[in-house]
Every structure is written in structure tokens, then in C-alpha cells.
Image 1 (cartoon, helix red, strand yellow):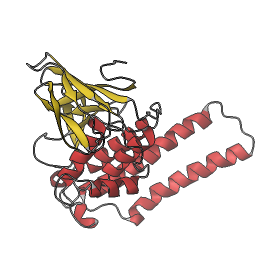
Image 2 (cartoon, rainbow, N blue to C red):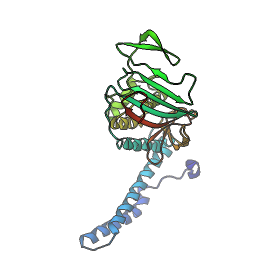
Image 3 (cartoon, rainbow, N blue to C red):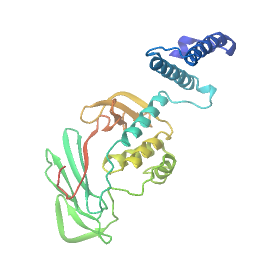
Image 4 (cartoon, rainbow, N blue to C red):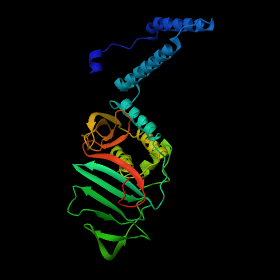
Length: 297
């Protein structure tokens, strides 16, 4: 719309901007000279810092506008709102680094409380994948509490419905709820995402799903969580989805790598940039590390 309203009006040339630049430099030099002569200006330094910050922000906004509104000048097509989406993820990474850093013990459980489709879900997953966890949903389904067998010695007990089948086991591979070796660097995390896709190599949707799977019901320590959000910035097709709500109805900013509806849209709080859940589908309410399955924080 901006391009259509703007028509074919070219950007100002360097010569046209020169007078304004000269006036700005002259004002800055004048202020600097006054300080060197010992002139006292109460409150002026703080105000000047604020003005300088706004000027820098305005310059950054202008550059972002050029990148978004003139994709043909930088090569390739730039997704709409890509700068906003990237900033949301950068802010989410900064927020992650402010979270308490807890290193779970192998014999503990990651507790996650979430809400989806009017149902509250509580799950206890073994930190190292070898202990028996459990799942509880309210209102309860016909099965009530469901055992989640751990994998020990390559075998796990068989569960049918919500009952353990006596003397029956099946082959298994431990699925830990905590991955201590996750990268803490954005580039290394991006490589990890590419190697652990649930879909086709290079598929942005599959990479976005991998990001969600890592933060939905697994525990990531703050450095790894921050690296995950920083790596997500590098996934092709990044875009922001405004005015979305998570599965509990909490409003936020949506981030996605697909143009197909709201499927897989990650929702972040507008103020704290905490991860809330997925648009209209799920809401993460609480995450903790506890000592026993069934224990609440």
C-alpha cells in the first residue's frame, strides 16, 4: 500500500539531504563546544541522550522500511513484517536469559501444565527418559491418569488404555525431557534443528515444528532456550502474525514460518516476550522440575 501511494517518487539524493545534515552537525558541534567551555546546562545531557536514541531509532526504522518495502533493491523477496518477527524472537531470547537456571538431576521429572480445547493437561516426563512418568487431564477422559513408562535396558512396559499390561514389554529408546548437550550458540543450534527435523530437509514448517517441540514439553536451560530463539530468526520465511491468542485466550504476538493460516503459530507475550503457547490451540501455564511423578510445584 505504501508503494502504491508513494508512486514512482524516488528517495532523496545525497545532495538533497546535505543541507539538513549540515545543520544537524553544526548543532551537535555547537553543543559540544559549549560543554568544553564549561557551560552548565541543567538536565540537558540526559535530554540529549534521549533525543539521540530517538534519532538512532528513526534511522533504524528508515533502513528497515527500505529493506521491507524495496525487496528488489537487495535481491530476493522480503517477507512482510520480517523485521518485527525477528525482533520478537531476539527479545524472547533476552527474556529467556533472565529465567532461573536450574540443572535437573537424572532422577527428576519435568512438570508441564498446559491448556488446550478447554482441557487442562499436566504431564510429568522423566529427565533422563528412564523413569516412569504420567499424564493427567481435567476434565478427565475415560482413562483418567495415564502411565508413561520409562525406557530401561532398551525395554519398556506395555500400556493399554491407562493400565500397565503385566509381564509384557516392548523395545524402546529413552526420550529424555531434558537435553543437557543442546547448543548454546545460535548457529550451532540452527545446525541442530536441521539435523533433527521431523519433515523434509530445508522445510521451514518442519524446522518451526522442531522449535515448538523443544519448548512445548521439554526443559531447556536459559542459554539453550535463548540460542533456540536466536536460531529461529534464521529460519527462512519468518513472519509476524498480529493479534493472536494462545489456547487459553491470552493475547500475544504470533511468529510463524508458513503462510497457511494459524497452524503452528508460536505466541509470545507482548510485554515480557515469554512463550505462551500456540495460536488458538495450546497454552503453556507452568513448567517446573520436580522430584516425583504426580508432584506439583
